[in-house]
Figure 1 (tube, rainbow, N blue to C red):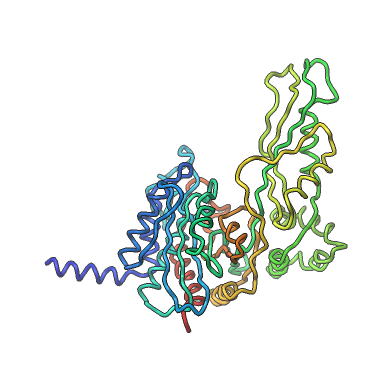
Figure 2 (cartoon, protein in one colour; figure 1 turned 30 degrees about the vertical axis):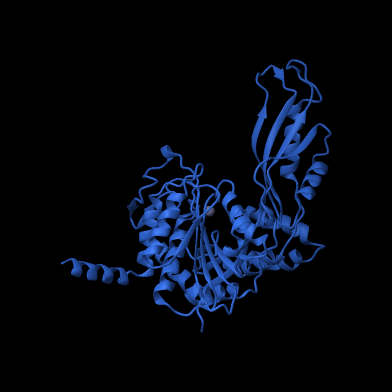
Length: 454
Ligand SMILES: [Zn+2]
């Protein structure tokens, strides 16, 4: 009896498809609460370790904090090419429980969706990568390069663990290129399957503006009113057309985008956008029409927090604003501060960098690597009408730290966007199970295309 059960069990395990396996992993991962802070990502690390062990993949669980461990596993290749890294983070952003209509940590399923914090960002990718790694192991094909799997903690709050890994375990994750989160796949109204590969990211550069004036009674207006000076300064920054800069990624992005029906209006503007003389006016025209495109062309400023005063009849001597500045990777912080100073042009305003996490600014990943070309081939063969477009994300990821080390990192667009706007970091975060399954199959194709010896 025992023997029969064992045989049946082995048979079932053997019959599990990569898609089924990814689904089983995702359900388990969503039940592990890794809200950051505090993270507790070791829950995920131990789960992955035990799952990989079941199929004979040895992994290493390591990190700078026992509650926040990372996982590294490696399948050996024949060494003829440099390794491929598949990475995904294990932490998630916190939830606001009263805004969720379904449980956030139970892998609740309804109407073909699985709900849970991290379903989109980015436990689906984590599950798919685990499943692909296991599939490669099971199929046993010869690999032309090592395939490294990395599950890293603390992406959402401080990126402390990717920095720890670079410091302490670099040879274990060093690779020619990496597949990471932040790719975007979407169907346009005319039926084109658009695969956006993230190859670059803007750099969060938080800024504090401080206005200082004299305090006094509200009944006597003063020219140096700190609140008035601060609001002037903010409005100057927000209204200004910032300088335009393009890089290899954004140049190709605009060119490819203009081929889609929705963006055909950009076609006559493209030559003007590429010429230094007309770039600025053209960018203004494009930006006025579509803020998302504008954000690809320049450093952006969003005032988000204000602090001033405590009583309506007292003029405060200080007022403070925080700005969420997203810098183009080709600009330095100093250049941005200097420009802000000139635009504001007010001795009562001081510009301070916000203390906190500093992200590196990096060159975009190359569009000519074997991995980028392999993705292009796979994506173009996936749909009848497909477009592959590199893009720079407005949000930052751990990939920036690896790019800064010279690794080509790509946000791989295997999952179709199920909701618009997306629910990453939002309420009732969810992914369609068919989306997960299709994405897993696609990821497997890409990894086989780049890592299987022909
Ligand atoms: Zn993420």
